[in-house]
Image (cartoon, rainbow, N blue to C red):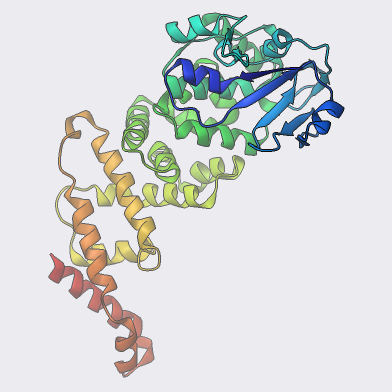
Length: 378
C-alpha cells in the first residue's frame, strides 16, 4: 500500500500558496484493509475514507467510465490494481494531476509543473469532455490564478457546450461554482472564459445578454473586480456584477429569473435587488434631502437590518469606484448615509407612539421625527 498527497495541495505548494486541505490517494489497498487500519468509510459512489486521527480524506485509486449524459453519469472502478498514473489521468487539469509520495518526491506524469510555470490551464486527457462541471471549474481556476486556457482545452469546452453537456448541469451546482468563482481574486475572468467557451448563454443567459452590451459590460465587471480587490463578501460581489442586468427590463424579467433558475440564496438576491433599485440614487452627486434619505432608509428596511444597509453602501462604493476616473475619488455618500441612519435610529419611536393623540398618526409622526433627526445630523 502506498499513499500519495494529490491535487490542490500539491499545486498550491508549488505556487507558494497556503494549503488549506490535503487529500490523499491510496494505491494497492482494499476497502477491508482500510477499515482494518481504523479508517472510516464515507464515500458512497467510490471508496473514500477519513483518517482515524487527522480526519483527512483518503480515497482508493480509481478509474472512471462515462455511462450516460451529465456530470453524474459515471461508473467508478477502484481496486488495488489501479495505478497512481491511472488515477491522475481521470483528473481535469494538468495542474491538478500531480502528486507527492511519502518521501516528498513529485509525481507529475502530465506536465502540471510546467503548465503552472507557464500559467496555462490544460486538460489531462480527452476524457475531459465527459464531465460538464469542468467547464465551470476551468473558468473558476482562470479567475483564481489568472491563467490562460490552452487552445485545445477551450476547443473541447466549446464542443461540450455544442453537444448539450452544459444543459445537464443542475442549478445548485452552477451556483456553487459561480459562488466560488465570485470569491476568487479576479472573478471577471470566470465570465470571460465562459463566454469564450460559448457556455454563458446556456447557463446564465441574463448575464450573457448584459455582458454582450459594452455599455453595461465594463461597469458590471469593473464593479465586480473592484469588490474583489476590497475583499467584499459574496452578496456584495453578486450585486456588483448584476447591478446593470436590468437596464432595459423590469426587475422580474432579468434578475429575478436568474436568481430563481440558479437558486441564488436570499442574501445575495436581496442585495442585488437593493443595488438595482437604489444605487443610482445613492451614487448621485451631492447630498440628498433629508426626506429622500428617510424614504430610502425605509425602502431598504435599514432600521431593522442596518448591517445589510451598510453592505449596500459598500456595493454602491464599488460601483462608483469601478469607473477609472473615479478610482481615487472620495465617496462621501457612505459616511453621510451611515450618519443619517444612526441619527434616525436614535429616534424613540415608542415614546412617539405613546404620546400620539391619534393612533393613525403614529407612523407619520415617527417619519417626521426621523426626517428632523437626519436633517440635524447634516
